[in-house]
Length: 247
Ligand code: F6R
Image 1 (cartoon, rainbow, N blue to C red):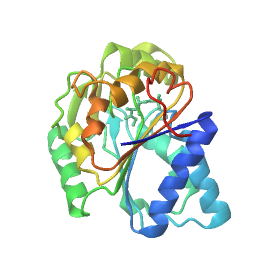
Image 2 (spheres, rainbow, N blue to C red; image 1 turned 135 degrees about the vertical axis):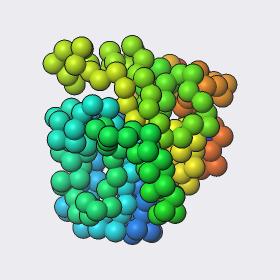
Image 3 (tube, protein in one colour; image 1 turned 30 degrees about the vertical axis):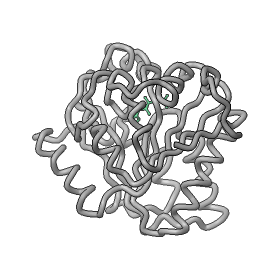
């Protein structure tokens, strides 16, 4: 696992975007796993800039998002579908036919989860998976206690995650309680992982994920088992790490 600590959020975002751009230039039909949340926003902004100013081409890219709330339609302003459209997809030349986000209103959620896994397989698997980390160490909506071999499925969100996500909703009671999430096993199947962590609020989780024991109580710690994982953080998120890492 390669850990890089950058001075602040912007530097972390640029470093991550550069890694993505490098992989994309090498493989124009990259299969890219994407996360929502505030952490990757700066990297998406930088990738949009690279597309607009440097012609970074997303036309052959296939994308798979990690998760979606159950009960929100794709055009709901708090759905992850809407988030991705607004913050990334509508600013780049990704082909919308190659875009995948779990559908929060699917009539048969279990069948939809199986279908999602099949779509990933069908394109030959994910080349590069971008990940954020929850303050409790979750990956996607795989909360502490999730099976480390899990696949795409329905999960109940923890109170902590509901609280964390409440900032995006008018009232905490409006935050959905269930989500579709890819599993830890699905994430680990990606050929490369890029985990980002920013801010003091993530310091404990980053420490547990990078230097702690591998345990389902910190799902992100499983990335220690991945053959090709890069962690990029800012100094705040790295503040509880006990070893020194390059900048
Ligand atoms: C998002 C996701 C979540 C977030 C995590 C961090 O698709 O799967 O695991 O990556 O909750 O969220 P932020 O970046 O908002 O702190």
